[in-house]
Length: 207
Image (cartoon, rainbow, N blue to C red; front, side, top):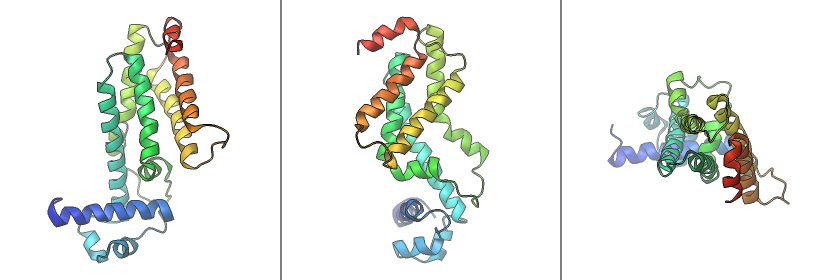
């Protein structure tokens, strides 16, 4: 089977239906039969593309991380200045999560105990987006605009804060008296102030 023509269309429909059902009903309730019923094909047809349910879910995770990385990579390429690049990466991450809530939930918020472990080699690929922040922090530290001891730890801590912000917005748990855009802007600017060298702070305040 190829991923072009009718075969490719069916594979895409299977993945789209699985993504919707997974977010709406959870991993435990997801089944090949439900997916088949949703798109009007036989369960057997799904097995022509995916060995089992876990293979299907892993493919959705792969897709989500691939989409995120491409958006971050394109954003990073627009900025030579590491400070501007880091801010842009963090803002793009939030935009991705808010624009792709189903993928985001499957990538970061799905915790099926019975699902096969996500393969380590795929996990390394999934971290490519985080590596862009790490590389930017390393560059900025060399140039003296960032004061961080360990760029990897700092990037991971920043991701934790950004993930928490996105999760609050997607779950609609943010205080209704708080403007979401102001919340995101304050989160990112607070993170930036935490990594900027003292001499770079006036430049940020001038924005």
